[in-house]
Length: 342
Image (cartoon, rainbow, N blue to C red):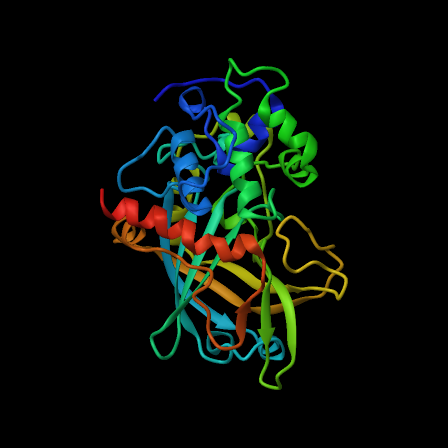
């Protein structure tokens, strides 16, 4: 894998979202165009793989480096006011949670700017043994509103190697896509631990309660003990796997807890645009508490064989019409199929 430094701060910040990787940028495709030869979702996986210097056999095209933990979810009484979903009522459910670093590089250092945003995927097992998933990231907002724009962003990064003409394609793209530019300038300090990192659902869902009342909302998953981050100086002193070394040690001492809430949309909020960040003043309703207890001894086997799907939904929760949300399972499926065949 080729080690390469990129001086352009926009490109570095963009890579920090996992949509590129400095190790392979010189070898990436040089065309910024979108072709009709393959579905856009497959092209996204192709470009992510190239930018990560892959393919890396048996790993995800994005968020390749992960750790799987086991625990339970305890619903809050307030959850029933929002949804009739079975796992958000009165019965506890078991959960499997995967934390991850961004990019398709399975050995990326945890504090590297390229390893952002962090990811969390939660699988709930319902009383009838069916499952439902939540997939979120550590940044509030997404840099593209459509799969086509996301692919255009990836291709712009891929075309912005050291020999690219000036202005580089990524600079041109950011100049015409303010949401992407806002994303790359967002602060992304490394967390002290996965246990001190908050996560956001960038896509909205439609929640329906037992009375038939509906509201749109986005998930928020916040550590009970608050968010805590490393300074730039402290980050330089971390080991490459400090997050993955820290979590098992914490869990060996006591469980780690997060509050799962839903941020409700106002009637003026756009529920179908992942780049539209809603004000923090919007009402939040507590759905319950995640209590994580142990590292999964079979986690490596589980994560290779498992595809989390944000559209695996239950009665009381429906997808919005957000194009990014609707495209995610198709892209995940491409990556899933490829790693199973390796």
